[in-house]
Image (cartoon, rainbow, N blue to C red; front, side):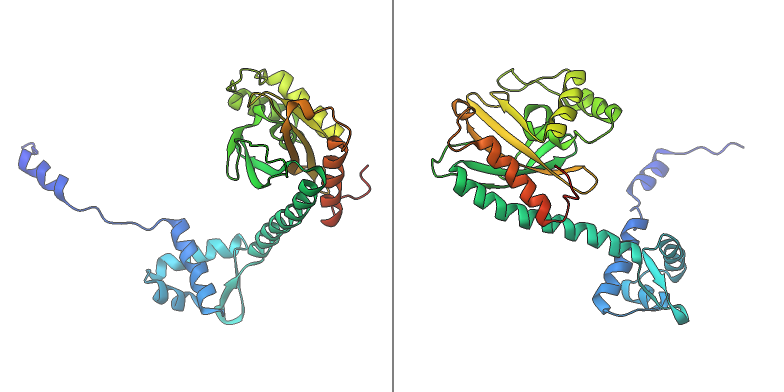
Length: 271
């Protein structure tokens, strides 16, 4: 005889509470947090007891983390932070060094140029303002710290992808290029891909009125020892100041970028 499901059965199923599950990545983070908190190597049993997880689950995750060098297994089965984490830490530390050095140079450039200076980086398909210092003339700009702007709207945005392979640049601009409020920003992926590579090669990118009316930006790339653009330093000015020579804003921003690279040990004989 066939079994049927009644409305009452379905009601009971719907009201049964779901079991909460801890994802593998959450368990991995719990293991790392446990070791950091204890400040010493520990066994899988100690970790499982500390975080309240099944020992069998911890064994599986620990083995995977050891294989991927996120954990290091020592004598006696003791577990400690792995060498891969050290490499991640070094990369993060270099990022902090970049922002610290760039912020110091940003201050100097703002003083010398008397203009607003920004340090910008890439966040996916956007340029983001990492740091900013206003110049003495208090020219107001709309892009403040934390502002995210489509890459195709800005001088810095183009520089930040200029080192990537052409196919990747084309893909990025095909996906992300949008019309700007002024309607003057380039949106053709082919033009943008070519312009971004050329700007990086020249060590300079300039845009005027593309994202904001009467606002111009003069940006120089901050390149690592492999030539990748890790960030930019730029001067934001009224567009009528683009051609001024006293002071020469283009020369100042390029010099600032080179000094940041030098202080970080990234020059390696680059011109």
